[in-house]
Length: 105
Image (cartoon, rainbow, N blue to C red; front, side):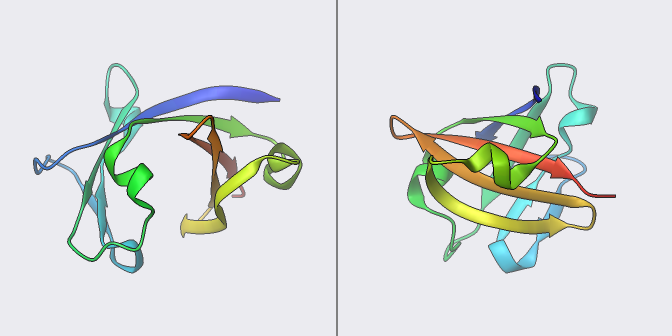
């Protein structure tokens, strides 16, 4: 099953409540604290994330089985665990990033 989780939007503005992901050189907000499920992403210089993710908004879906959801899609970022209990991957649909998330805890 696939359900909408959030809309990720790149920004250059610092936001209250950001979490820093050191390995990704990235600040993110918690979309559950947004009335419209927006996750703001602020990328530091030298961020290893693909440029398309740093410059375009993405839609995120929660899935029951991340590996099955990836299927034969064009994988932009293979599965990784940005924080405990959350496993994510990014795919491209017509050059638009899409995130799949599996809650593991």
